[in-house]
Image 1 (tube, rainbow, N blue to C red):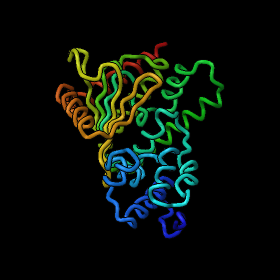
Image 2 (image 1 turned 180 degrees about the vertical axis):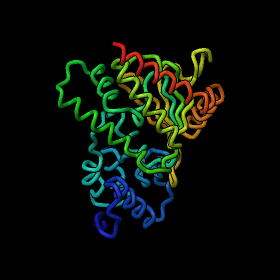
Image 3 (image 1 turned 90 degrees about the vertical axis):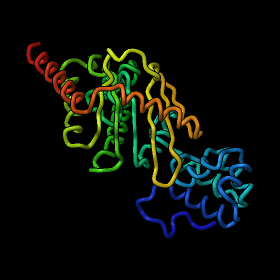
Length: 281
């Protein structure tokens, strides 16, 4: 097997390097993604996502790949290190896919999405989930979340479009000052045209994903994914029919939500209300 570190761009992630080696090994044996997938009991699109680095090669899958491709334990040896993550197990794969996405559409019914959170807001959320955690553990979680947010340092990629439930504005996380800063940050990103934001008002009534958040991710050279999240759980889906169904759900949410212009006006108005309230405490 070729040295995974040679002749690679230094900016490539370990997972992307392993994925490139998988593609090389598959093609050298004249196997299509579909035919390799059949031999290791996954879809051809899943193989494509492993090759693109948008999905991790799990330990049991690595063993199967070595057997089918005759790679002398290469994937078993290298995938363990490549799969190490600073994120919780249920979110690690989604976070890594998020970093490779060219487009992200997210629905958040209750909280400001992680990519848009301020340090103070993120700290309040993590502390609420883990009330007895040590302070340095919370610090690490906040740092990891802020690192995710640096995806938005690029002025154009990924294209980020979020639909927020009105409860995101009304649920007072951390008090007026924290909320004023958090909503001001979201509004600032929208004002700079770095994110498209729509609000789904309470008056919209019932809607599809009322019990959890949803994130759709598209990629330049891999099939799309959808990540569905609940309390302490998450599921990354690549089945085309499943992705299509949730894409329709998201499109319906966008059609029901207020326009970006009206949404921005309300976000800024509520942020100002929180700031005014904080000044008079």
